[in-house]
Amino acid sequence: MLKGKKILLGVSGSISAYKSAYIVRELIKAGAEVKVLMTSASLSFISPLTLATLSKNAVIHSFTHGDNGEWNNHVKLGFWADLMLIAPATANTIAKMANGICDNVLMATYLSARCPVMFAPAMDHDMYLHPAVQYNINLLEKRGNIKINPDKGDLASGIIGEGRLKEPEEIVKIINDFFSKKVNSPLKNKTVLITAGPTYEAIDPVRFIGNHSSGKMGYAIAQSCAERGANVILISGPVNQSVSHPNIKRIDVISAEDMFNTVEKFKSSYDIAILSAAVADYTPEISFKQKIKKKEAGDEILLKLKSTKDILGFLGKEKNNGQILVGFALETHNEKENALNKLNNKNLDMIVLNSLNDKGAGFKNDTNKITILDKNNNCIEFELKSKQAVAEDILNHVETLL
Ligand code: CTP
Image (cartoon, rainbow, N blue to C red; front, side, top):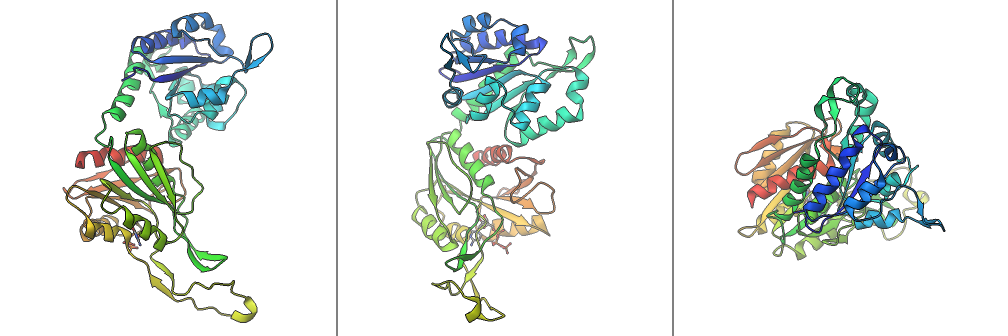
């Protein structure tokens, strides 16, 4: 799985930095291309010459190189990589990652990288368990960075505890599994239709009825689908999100009607549809062509709303054999019962329930807490996780239905 994979290894200043030589050796043996970035602290623990020789590439440890101070292009490096691995990741580097501190070339590259990032903490037991370090680690995981748990055992301080850098062979196995899951996904070459974000229902040219959906969940699902090799059609309401994968075709829409009309065009061509958009259920019966003026409208305005078309319900009715349809349910009470009703009434294969009663779930947050219910009567509750990790859980379950 690692053959031809481009891996950026960031090494920070821990006694376990010597293990980075073994990580590079294992990655190269498995056919990966490796470029190494080092912090200045790590130079005290292992020589760049060792890592340059093993990786067959110059090691980068400052913003410039050569007599003329040529720039080490960290942005280009970030684009180059399929994966960035920071191992060992010290408490200091983790804190910088969590806070966006850019005082070395490793951090500049981390902040520019668009690829998945893994980090393997390595430090003393008490440092690792300190609330500040745990807080930073949680923050990174919530943002979608993948933590490689440290081992328990003898530490350089003489203490026995948690904080040993995971063994290089195991780190390389985790990376291999990560790529293998993506390469062997049943979603590969499938067409996945996704709706995301809110819809805006115009009252007049300057005002609308909308909602707080950020689109983060739908965009995370689109990204994970694309990484698993699917061709994604992402129909997006107005959001402040961007896509960076070539397999994602994004179509922007504004209103529930636009979204319905766009989805309708793909009703027979999708293999899997995941409808995560927070579509307005009602829209103004009349959308005024000119701005409503206070003077003319007076003290009170009555807005008459009519219902919009239920896109999910429509796809459920039109579903062909073999098409998989996934809906979302955002509930505030009788959550499971309401979600099950939606699953059955709308002819869905699976529904993702989030409850507004769960802290950190639903709109706007970077995290979500979901329960998956499916047509085979499965009901699986998940922990609060980053929306990227939730997207992986959703797609893992979709794969079981294929
Ligand atoms: N949905 C849709 N079209 C609509 C309204 C909702 O496709 N006009 C989809 C959403 O994308 C989501 C699912 O339907 O996948 C559930 O949305 P939700 O608003 O929770 O359910 P409703 O069916 O609108 O029921 P209610 O508002 O009564 O809970």
